[in-house]
Length: 339
Image (cartoon, rainbow, N blue to C red; front, side, top):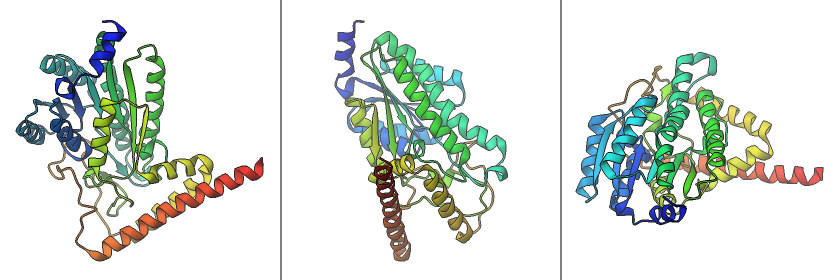
């Protein structure tokens, strides 16, 4: 297939395209599946929890889209190849592959079991690599395709007490940039990265927790529907990098300008929170087996009925944004003085 044909195929109407989404059972993945269903795409849904996947498939079909649930563990390279082959058989091609499955583990580095760090990296990093390894051969044969990596702000900004998570997210940027360079000769194969800020998903409820305290996402917290809309937009009009949420850019530049300061401040903020937070038992969350709770799009963090909690979240959001802005300004002034 010639490159010009690839370009034509890449910009086909959405209802003619086949979309694969990993981590499609809840959160941003579930929202993305429903968003693609609104456009009439053929959707292949992947996750470990088949029962919940079947629910998402039914929702997509009720909306008039063709959908197929495929139970898949992203840490199994052969299972990912089977997912790709099944998608081609189902839709006739793979036009868009969304690497989305992700997990979180929180806790002091040495108090968190090493197998937990390892599993976070397997799911968050190797899962994306296995996805790319499975789909890129089809893209090359077709001479077109869009690979979307949902990375998060963690790809730019380190998270103290989440070392395995940070290692996986920083690794994702390297994997994606290297793959993009390698595939640069293929004009119609696009590697696209998304960097959303903290999302109102069940992800925190699913997290492995060895901190001994209840975990909450740091405000400002964004609606995962915003990520879903961005993914559909990128699928139609590919971009190398998309930042979701204004605080993402602020934190990214703050860390770029003042890495030592941001590391220290962030560690102190997290440490202060853990000292005040209510106790919670240790758990491996959904790392080693799918969770049967928190299967919706939203985690409920933005819809609490408690006015005091809403007020605290607003104050924290303003503080985080203000702190990040202040560090960026301070860094710029410091750089100008050094000139």
